Image (tube, rainbow, N blue to C red; front, side):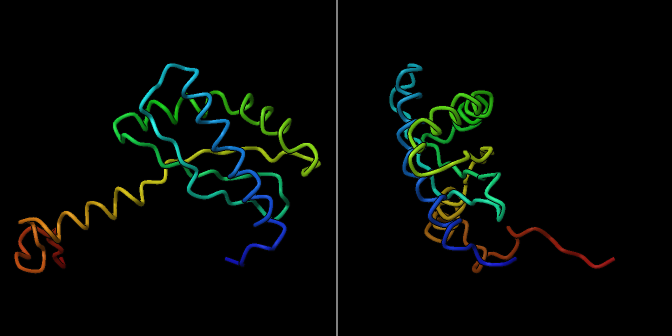
Length: 132
């Protein structure tokens, strides 16, 4: 995989900054108090037609519901972003949303290492891999 160009990075950061506002406002207006949505990464394709948006949602138990709502409202979100970035972008990329669970993954590793479930001390808790 080749590295992102400066243009892709620039567009990604512009979208990331404005998406945070749009999504947080939409969640608040939708009556979802106490929900924190952060845009962890925006990757734009080489032809600038598609932007993959990775979201971290807290609390985790609301992530599935929220991401479904965001995906179903993607055209509205795209339109709102287009209005905000019309002076910076000629064409608004199509938005694809994904849940970024890397923080949860890191947290689980951290808990495993701190807690009683230490796979280094007790290898029996690891998945058994047998050669057949």
